[in-house]
Image 1 (cartoon, rainbow, N blue to C red):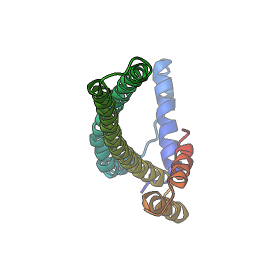
Image 2 (image 1 turned 180 degrees about the horizontal axis):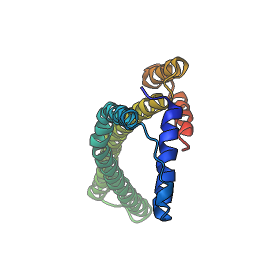
Image 3 (image 1 turned 30 degrees about the vertical axis):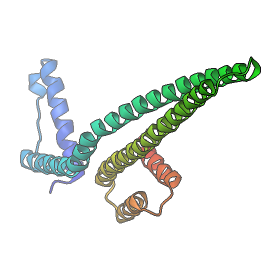
Length: 209
């Protein structure tokens, strides 16, 4: 395998030769390049790049596939919460009107029992509608929980990609062990979410984010 200093020497020779050609100084062309070594190094670098991309491909693909599901869940949650909130407000308004009407009847000339029953029936109806609307809120809560799970999964896959790329940049034993521990903590079921986010932030900071 070619030494780094030899590679730098070859590159410097190529740059010098290029400058001579551009300046028309053909008599100064003096190329000293170990082409075999450079091709060998180039092949190794390309192979390492391919291996790195293959390593990152699976988690990136998984994250990409999951992202549309997360967006879909978010839209469903927004729609459900909007609908149920609107229904609660509408029924609350109607309930208020029915109560006011009942109060008016009670303070006026003696109303018939039928009118009272109708008012009470309407009040019960609106109360039941409010309860039903709250059940939609519960459905929205469940979908929000699913959305959070999807986003957590996407985050974990992206963390895996970042760890792979980080290890390729620094393959020292200390760094590999540190990143392996980070992955265990991020994926650990007993790790608090706040701590997981701190670990992710620390990893992103290593890439300048």
